[in-house]
Length: 163
Figure 1 (cartoon, rainbow, N blue to C red):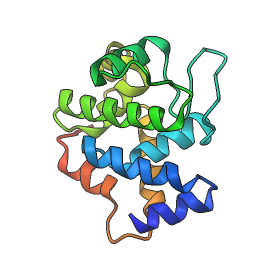
Figure 2 (cartoon, helix red, strand yellow; figure 1 turned 180 degrees about the vertical axis):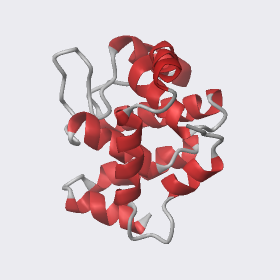
Figure 3 (cartoon, helix red, strand yellow; figure 1 turned 90 degrees about the vertical axis):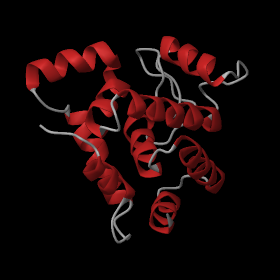
Figure 4 (cartoon, rainbow, N blue to C red; figure 1 turned 120 degrees about the vertical axis):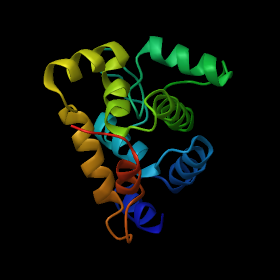
């Protein structure tokens, strides 16, 4: 946890966001390094970004996905451009996907990025994870590099993933 916090502070991520990241990841049983890697990949840690495709916030939520997550969390006051709400939504969605994929990290990440249907079609065609999922896992491990073993690597080893 210390290594991830130090690394994120070096990337100019506000400390209050980092504290919130750790809190929501603990609540939803998700490695904080995975959510951090997603935020870095999707927005470069820019909270108020809206892509040309209309995805919003740190972890780049499409409107339909945002409505689903907020409805499941049960808090209609959540806003996608609020960094705390966006991190909460990302951690919740990843936890939900981990449950749906029996803890298998790679298809969970692919479903996060492409939706469940898109991820299923990709896996049928390519028999393995997307470059997105591979990048997220590699970056999450880098973010925790000072630890004995990263949470991400431990989570990946515990999953039933077979390529």
